[in-house]
Amino acid sequence: MDGNGRWAKARHLPRAVGHQRGVEAVRTLVRAARERGLEAMTLYAFSTENWNRPQDEVAALMGLLRHYIAADIEEFAQNGVRLQIIGDYSKLPGDVVKMLEDALARTAGNTGTTLAVALNYGSQDEIVRAARAAAAEGAITAEAIAANLDTAAMPPLDLLIRTSGEVRLSNFLLWQAAYAELWFTDVLWPDFTPAHLDEALAAFARRERRYGGR
Ligand code: IPE
Ligand code: MG
Image (tube, rainbow, N blue to C red; front, side):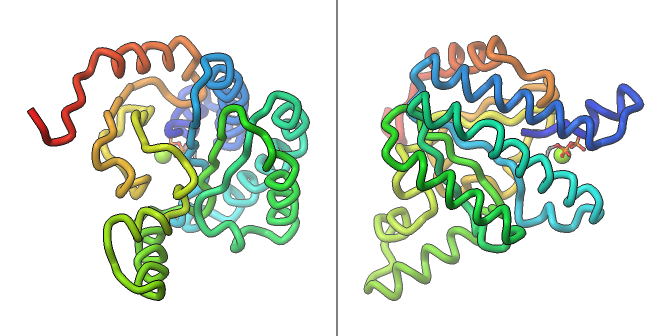
């Protein structure tokens, strides 16, 4: 989800307003994912590198996270959405950790769309943690690493979308993206609508996946 800052800048608005509009896009897209019967969707909300942003922007993002969890957990609970967190969320502010754990517990029994939110997430950090856990268990194999990734309970990654015209992965789901289809769009995240999602899904459906075969 990239482009909140540029969305705001283009309108001479504070970056925080861009993030606010970004949250509204999240809300719409989670509903769209559910309505389309997607098994899982992962949103990159806060990276291990985002801590380097100015303190007031980090605080604004944490504030939005609090607000979003409080406002939307009921809708998740009622619509079968199962929340997952990837990343080391224990480093977030204590009250946010508590809200997240409560939300995880409340939706744990749901069987609809899995919504994974990446918080304090960095793929290299995740792979290091998984490799250590695999070594502690015995053997460092691809299967053992995969089983120890934060995404272990999620289905394989099929489609990875990045908004705002950047054409890189930026430490997101590096292991999981090994055979994922990639979709890059110039649309800024606050402008990303279910119609844009449908465009990406339609392109995905036309791709031929060979997984190294021929
Ligand atoms: C993405 O938007 C939102 C988060 C990282 C939380 P940006 O804040 O990166 O927006 P740009 O890249 O400055 O436009
Ligand atoms: Mg950005």
